[in-house]
Image 1 (cartoon, rainbow, N blue to C red):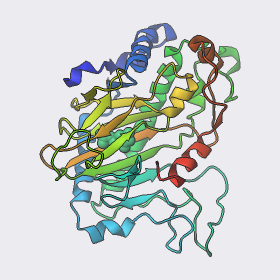
Image 2 (image 1 turned 60 degrees about the horizontal axis):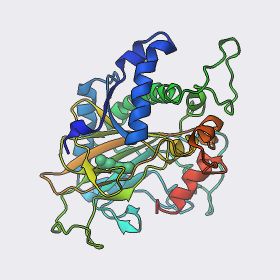
Image 3 (image 1 turned 90 degrees about the vertical axis):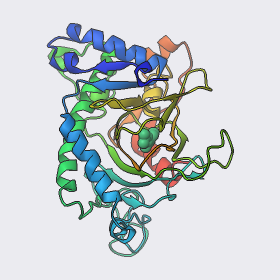
Length: 348
Ligand SMILES: O=C(O)CCC(=O)C(=O)O
Ligand SMILES: [Fe+2]
């Protein structure tokens, strides 16, 4: 399948439109894409291609460093004497596990800094951290990486916000009452996703994939994977990847065909995660995908996960429950509980 067979959505009209009416066409296209694929390409997001290229290039420079350099920002377990928080920092090749199997990639994970209330002391002595309550570990080299990534994350948060606003309209949720702008996160109008991601507990992964060395053996239980088959566990993913073709594969609705989601220059590959599936009571599916990199060279990708607020309560929206004609698929839990469950279970 060519990259063009996943839908392409241009966000520029939506970002520039002044009324909800003008935004409807984009919203309709998003509804179709999320219903049919759970995946689409996003153009017109407003982040210059030169910035995207720099982000990839800095990641590539980091991964090219010797291992002892990369291990200076190694991730350590929460509660340990090294001050790790079990989530932030660098993981070497094979340390990440998906579906019980080791992934053939290395990565740095960055999360929103823990600023939602007090920090608790970790299980160990002074200076130990609870899961997620440490600081991000930024590499010293390449020197400009930290500054560029901070700016890039701020830009991505704006894109994420525009996207989830479009998603609320795409689901045909009620227009917010203009006279009484609400701060109530439980109100289920078209701004519901905007309010519940206002303090997005975002995640950014900088991933490096060496070319797989084992021979391709289709469906073999023990075949090496660059990143095992999974759905994303959060809200909306904005994936930036280098031009390597054939690596990211998306499972078609038929449940057996893997579609290549090859990069389009300047575009993000966007997909929805389990929290969006839960909110929509399954009207929109979080779609399985995987990475198998047998192409040329060392592949780099930088997915940004635009997630709900840590304390946001995620449960199926009433309108979606009605429309789906199904019982609610989940009783509701906070995003933070869901995330901690994922981290502590090593994303199994
Ligand atoms: O590297 C990619 O193309 C996708 C990575 C991915 O699916 C993930 O990190 O959740
Ligand atoms: Fe993913």
